[in-house]
Length: 112
Image 1 (cartoon, rainbow, N blue to C red):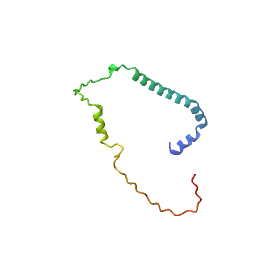
Image 2 (cartoon, rainbow, N blue to C red):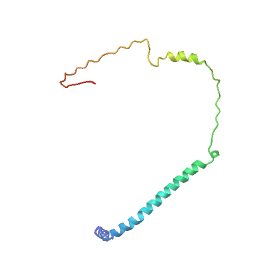
Image 3 (cartoon, rainbow, N blue to C red):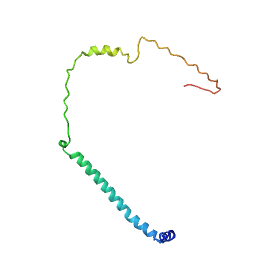
Image 4 (spheres, helix red, strand yellow):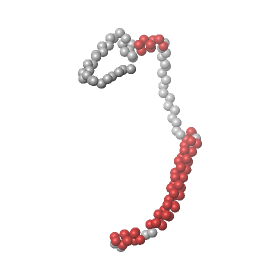
């Protein structure tokens, strides 16, 4: 068979009937596939929820525990104050004014 014969056979097919059959069966096929995907997802979720915790391997590692040194809460406050978290209160800040060189306008501006 050459190329022309194949094209002639394709043109001779009853495309209107093929389209009708496809439109009739395609939604069912898609529905079944989606239903299977949802069922698989729910099955996996069920197994994840209801598997016993004894199946998982848990290693209990005991690290050496060092004694905790307790300090009074007032000794930490002086250290925190020395960090000047919000700036130094005694330091004077110099603010420089920016000079704006703007041309005069003839618009009527009223601030309210």
